[in-house]
Image (cartoon, each protein chain N blue to C red):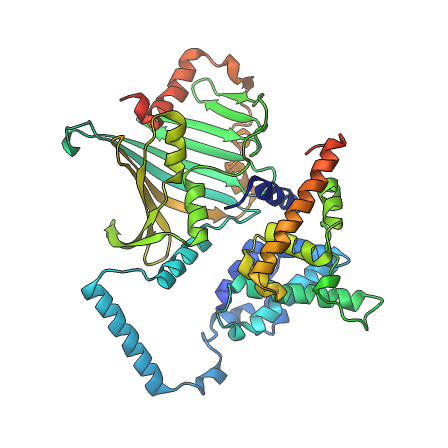
Length: 330
Length: 165
């Protein structure tokens, strides 16, 4: 886990990145004595290695691997030995690892289920919130987010990731951008917080506990038990002490993180995040504009958030806010 | 290692490789040449990657060696061996963060390299250990000292009332 100072250092280093407008893979291939067309059709292994093949040994190894796979399928779905679990997490983390100079894109469907006390799952209420976000991973670290709930969409953005960076909310009815600026003492951690940060950190640490396999949307996924730190901290700060069971699911085919589920053991809710897409986009002008709310609305007048009419505030912020703060409604 | 994997690493991390090479080489042209040549070597030698450590750490070691060789070629003391301890890494754009540039200059060369690999290249301890040929415990110790020295230096500048980022 990175300390605040480490994140600060990492950020300051990221300001030193040069432009990558002169990258030239063809030049690399040319220097290596390959041309791009030839490299596409090249064998997966060099010819000289084929002379070292030992057919009986290879056949034995293949048979052994197939037998092991078959036994796993028949006897047990996946017991997740520590080495195997670590490998899966490393591969999943490699897909999500923070990459400076790109645009991080996430598309998430968040499903909250609230269980009425003593009335079982039949009386449960479900809320679904969808979101898309684009975040620059290099200065100036702008980000933009669309959150949709119950027919309403909230578009918000930030001019940077520091606590003094301006925050924006767009009101589509009046075509106005409202800006807020943090005016308190800047003591917050610069480290990103939230479920995505927790998923990234814990996969990178590679220490999640394997918990078998299951199927999501017809695809086999590995299941890992997570520490409940994200919700634990959030809940401790807001209501009574609570604890959650948290599980993370990684696609067995391509190692993409597909789902995280937090289930409260006492407060009666479940929060499920389905990661429909989580990737890094090239920092093209178009993609950079997607992370910049002001570029999305270049002609929108800019007004301070304090000037936002109360009914607009209620419609834009509270609707979303209520869905995202379930315990306040119960 | 597959060629596709190298190409993806090159396209996604080019600017970081270039930034570190800029910190070693005398000019941007030299730095770019070091990165291109480093990746070309990685392409040529990709079958020798045995899966020990991450592919990225393996490529980093090659590119860093390429940058060191490049600087050695440009050095007046080319007959002398330039080892990692001799690398005088500097921020590529010190004018963007003069406080950090000065604080880094005060670090011993090896510790500075480890700090760069950790916070510039975002490599983990094992990867840095493989690149530098030391143990991950030594990496941890160097980073701990490096962080403490940087924090002290940056706080001292801040306390002196100089420009705050």
